[in-house]
Length: 311
Image: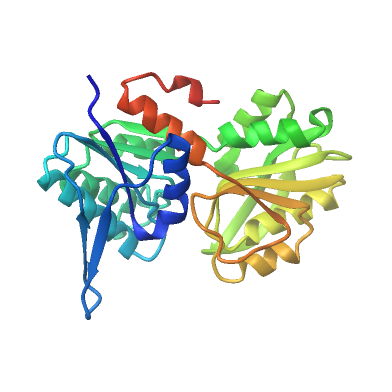
């Protein structure tokens, strides 16, 4: 027999947690955070969670306080005798550090997994990890959801599929873009880029035919937007009719909003795994709240969630 469900939230993700709770048909459980003058803080659950299924919702985008708050809440739930402790992490930070790309650097994603397990998490829910193999860094179950569940439905409703070409702004995203192309039965194009330093593209070329097509670029993260905007420029220079983008996690650092506004992108479709820092007429936000609420319900009731996976 399933135990009671309690939904809690970190401060940074309250905007999304409230929507998830509403979609689930409940309210966020009672909690407070004691903040000290030096910046230290102490989260506290203001109701009993003994023997309950506790879902703690927090994206771990910068700053690191968001991760630390999640770890403290997990530890508090463990010490309060929760039956199961599920970390719901719509955006999993440090996921770009999934391997050593040069000597004497950390594997940040593995460290994040170790910290979550050491704190006492018994399950993790997340969306569009930068690298699928990060699931293997955990020794607890990981429910890895995909933004494609939302984006494919949006494209079918708003685009002429017959004239569509799916594309990726870099070779690393080829598998993701190819999955979209197969799901929609359309062609694929690839942007090949070279970098000299991080967040700065030195050279890029297009592989594939985009002449007269409506191109949709897909990726998991948009940071400064430099790569995406340059890819859109190149697609149009190669004869594309229009270029849009579907990106799951809108980090949008630095001058990203200016880059998007001044780019030749028709539209950027993203999700609310991370809150937008400012409004932008070119950005359309799809909410992940209903998807996470449904998966939380199914996980609590020990039901299959395989129908939520597009690929």
